[in-house]
Structure formats: C-alpha cells, structure tokens
Length: 243
Length: 309
Image (cartoon, rainbow over all chains, first blue to last red):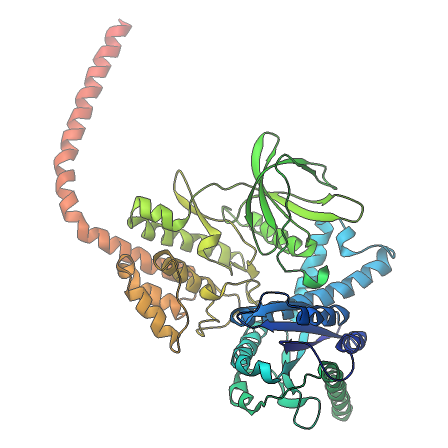
C-alpha cells in the first residue's frame, strides 16, 4: 500500500477577517478537498483570552476539519506543533472511523470499541501519524497589528519544522503571507522539507491594514491543487519511477 | 468537542461519587482530587478497600495512547518504571456523555527538591545513578521517556527511591518525541533533534538536576550551550559531576550505561578520597566487635547447654 500524504493549511492570525468571502465557508470547501485547516489566534499580552473578534478562529478550524487554539506569543512555538500533530491524528482518526463504519456498521466509531480493541486501533493511528507524509501550507496574517509578532511566528515555524522532521515520514512546508502586495496572498517561502532557511526570507513581509482571510484560504487551496497538477505531470514524464 | 481535544477540561467529580466501569464493571469510590494534567484529572479512589489513583478525561483517544504506554511498560523487566496499571474502562454517565478512565497504583511520596533539602546533598549521586539505571532499562526495551521533568518524578519512602508518575510522553525509539516541556527539551535549546533516542532523556536528566537548584528555571540566550554550562558550574553540589553532566548536555553519551559508568567512577573516587579517616575507626572497632561477638556466642552456648541438662 502506498502511504498517503496529509495536507494542512496553518493559518496564523491575530484578528478577524474584514475583506472578501467568509473564511468559514472557504475552510469548509478546503476540508472537502481533503485539506485540514488549522487556525492559531495570537493574543496581545494585555488581551484576555477569548476576545470576541477571535471567535472566527474557532469557527474556521471547526468547518475546516482542523484544530484551533488561541495563545499568547510566549507559548506560540509549542502550540503550533501541538495543533499540527493533533490535527494529523484527528484526520487519521477520521479515516479509521470511516473504515470501522464500513466493517462494523454505520453507528460504530473508535469510541464505541472496548478499551482493549481501542488501544490496538490507536496504535495503528499512531503508526500512521509517525510515518505518513505531510504537507503544511502556512498562511501568515501580515496586517498592521501583526507587525511586532512576526519574529515570534518565525521562531515558532522553525520549531515546527524541528518537531515534524523528527518523524519518520517526510514533510514539506511552504509559507504564504496575506494580504500580498498585489494579490490576496504572496509567496514567502516555496515548498521545502525544512524551514531553517526562512530567517533570511521573512523580513520581506510588509504590513497593511486589511485582512482578507477567506480569499487567502481559497488561494492556499489552489496552491495545493497547482502543486498536485505539476507533480502529476512530472510523474507522467518520469514514467514508472514510483514503482 | 473534538476540535479542541487538548484544551484543558476540568472534570469535577464530587468526593463520595462511585464510578462504575462500562466494560469491566469495577467500582471506584472517589476520595479526593490529586491533580490536573494536560489531558485529564487524577483522583484518589478506593476499590476493594485499597487506595488507587484514577485518571479520567473526555478525550478517549489521548487516554488510550497513555494506556498503551503503561501496558508496554508493564512488560519491561523488573518494572518499577511507571505506576502499575490496574484497570481501563469508560464511565457512561448518560446516553451521550461518556468519560474514559484508567486506574493505576497510587504512589505517595515527596518531590525531589524537598527530599534533598531534608536528607542531604549526598542523595543527588544516589538518585542520578538510580534514574540512569531506570532509563537504561527503558531504553533497552525500545522506549524513550520523552517528558522527563521534575514534576513527573516522586521520591517514595523505604527505601527512598525515585519513581516516575506520568509516562504520557514515553515514545518508541526512533520516532518523534510525543510530549515535551520546553525547558527540558534539547530542541528548544537548539542542541539537538526531537527524535526519541537515549541522549534525549540524558539531556533532560541534567535539566532535572538544574531545576532542583534553579526552581524558577531560566531562559534561553543567544548562546544556549554557554548558558547551560554556566548554570551547571554555578551549583556547588553538582561540581563533582560537572564533566559528565556537560557531556550529557552535548549529547556525547550514546547510552545511559556510558553515563552511569562515568558517574559511578566519580562517586567511587570521591569515596576513596574520604576513606582513610573512616578506615582508622573501622580498624579499631572491627577486632573489638569480633571479640565481643565471640564472647557472647560462648556465653550463650553455655547458657543453652545449661538449660538442656
């Protein structure tokens, strides 16, 4: 059996969208295409947890089949890697639950198994999480208020690559910022197995006033599609290489 | 909601509540709350007149992962590694509300710093050796502790020994560390990977010792290696082990055994240096003791034989 690739969008923001389509709807669309949308909301140090504007964070992840978390800057690094791993497990569990339903009937999920069997199934889920390939497209909000948080975001992303590259499976990361100068999103860092080199790239970010989260997620989705197309073309050329 | 699976949830169960398992039908009387972790809440409970610790959470799958580790540790020889696993079950409260729980041995003890403060610095060497031995056992069976930290260790009495209370981070060798705490994580300090290998635990072990003496911890600097070395040098009680601790920080030990060898050597050379004084006393006392014993034996045998006849 060929091992699958999990696809995730990781949205890092500190507020509400204010331009374009509803991000909750585009996240649902991405989810349908097999891409999980995770959202991390960053609080200012003087903000209390769960301010109103960040309700969107939760809603987007919920409809995007991903995981969300609202954090202060200081715990960003650890949160980013936890959210990513948690979302992987969640997606894999979803697959397993579908299989279980086919074998055991429509009402059966992992939670309905007795503890012993559940343990065995979870072992398989863990194995898959360790060995599957993963593609993460990071979408960083660079609107004005994010300006003083970019450095922390950068560190957290380098830390994420450290965590994920300890796995057996392969990883690929890319980073887009939104809003871009001319378009909704802008490429910051192209697909690569590591993120250590981003230190040189990030200063390019400029901060503007609008936050087009919905269009950004849509564009991210297309980026996945585009890459898929390119790769399938390349695979056709190289013939039986995979086998 | 699954979406926020790892957020902290407080499950408040009133003391006096009886929890009965859905599958195995065992009953547990809740006595009091012991603590709250990232995944679940731990209660002291009573079952069949015995005390036990019960961990309960609504995150069934995360609990299952922990249980799998405890089960694996059960198979490790001479197991005193984690708490002993007693039962795994679900608590069905209503048709749609269900909690997962597992029951384990209740470990009573005190924290490492408070024990050392009360009983003296010489225990540091003892505990280092003991932890290294436990780690060696664990590593040999293909696992790495991962989230080794002061909070996860407890000194139990008679004989005083260190036990691991939370094994949630325990990871199979060669995989990505499942759970870690930044202060104890060599990746955070920029000194190594987050892959589960023996040297990962040995780094954390040194950090455990440092936290005993720097209870407020300390943070990263542009040159982490230098910071850590400075902190090690700054503790008088750790001075004898300095060279070995630094090697562990740099990941120079491939196994716990190598580090254990170094520490043992340090301890025995220290004892040798101290011995002359003690030897004198022992030389004086020993013949005297033998003589005394001999006389006593003789007297007793006379006494018994006089009883017989």
